[in-house]
Image (spheres, rainbow, N blue to C red):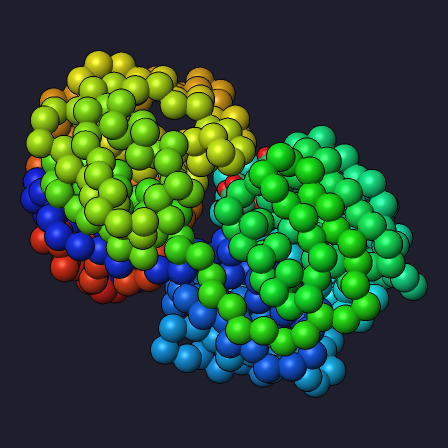
Length: 421
Ligand code: UD1
C-alpha cells in the first residue's frame, strides 16, 4: 500500500498551479450526454475520481480520449441508460448522470451513490425535483430506476440548497418542455460552471446568484468546447498549507473570489494575502497564527470541503478555535488522527473545539476521507519529525500529484510503498 512520508517544518515557498475543479468536471461531463457530437472539455483534472468517472462514461458508450489538458468526448453513438454496479466506480460524481441520462434517453438506472463517508448523503431532494419534472422513480436490487415519457418544466423549491440536486434538476430541465424555476438553489461556482457550459451549448438558463435559477427548456443542444473552472478546494488546501507552514505561496490559475471565505479566515488568523493578478493569489504568514472560529455553510459561506485542512492549521494557532460543521455530520474524521500528532481537539456532535498547542509531532496516521487526508498532509508539513499518511488513495481521489506540487515549493514529501501495511 502506498503512503506519503512527510518531514515537517519546512515553510512552503514558490508557485503552485491549481488544476481544474473535480466537482465541476462531473456535472459538465455528465451534461455533455444531452448533446450529440464531439466536444473538447478542457482543464479536467487527472485525479482518481475523474479516471473512474471516465471509465463509467466509456462503459455506457461515450467515446473518451484524454488530451493534454482535458478530455475529448464523442457522444454520437447510443448511450446505455444503465450504469453498472462497481466498487471502483462508487463515486458521488456519478449523481449527475441521473439527470443527464433522463434528459438523453428518458431513462436512467444507477447503483447507489458513493463518495466520501462523511454523512448519510441522502438523495431525496434530487428525487423530489426530478419527480416534479415528470420522472417516476423506483428501486430494484440496489439500483435507482428513473423513467419519463416527457420532461416537463415546473416550479421546484429545495428545502436545502443541495449542490447535486440543483445540478441534476438543471441538467434534466435544460431539455424539458416549458420553464423550470428552482428556488433555494445552490449557488456554488461549480453549478455556475455547469450553467455556463449548457448555455454555451444553446440552453436558456438564468442564474444570477440570487438562489433562483430559471431554465427554459430547449429542443436541442449543440456540441461546444468548454473550460472547467479552477478547483477552489485545491486552491484553499494549498492556501492553508502555505499559511500553516509560515511560507510564501503564490497560487496560479485560480479564481480568488471562489474561495474568498478561506482567504478571509486565514487573514483573520494573521496571514497576509495579495492578488498579483485576477487569476492568482499570494499567501504569506511570517507571524504566529491565531485561533479563529469557523462555521461551514453553503456557498458563499466557508466551504465544508476546506474545513478539515483549516482544522489542521488551527491545532497550532494561539488560543482556542470552535469549528461548527453544518453540512455533513461526519466531517471530523481527521480529528482523532490529529490528536495522535499531539493536537488538542474535542468533538461534540457537529462542533470541534481546538485548543492550539505549541507544535505537532510526526506520527503514523491514516486518511479516512479525501479532505481529512489533505488535513493530515497539512499537519505533517507543520509537525516536528516524520509523518506517514496511510490510505493515500483517498487523497489521490481529489488531488493531482499532490506530492509533486508540494515538492516544487520545498515540501519534503515522498510517496512510498509498504508491503506490510
Ligand atoms: C457536493 C460536493 C462535495 C461538497 C458538497 C457541499 C460533488 C461531487 N461533491 O456534494 O464535495 O462537500 O457538495 O458543498 O460535487 N442533502 C439532502 N438531500 C439530498 C441531497 C443532499 O439532505 O437530496 C444534504 C446532504 O446530506 C448534506 C447537504 O444536503 O447534508 C449538502 O449536500 P449536497 O450539497 O447535495 O452535496 P453533494 O452534491 O453530495
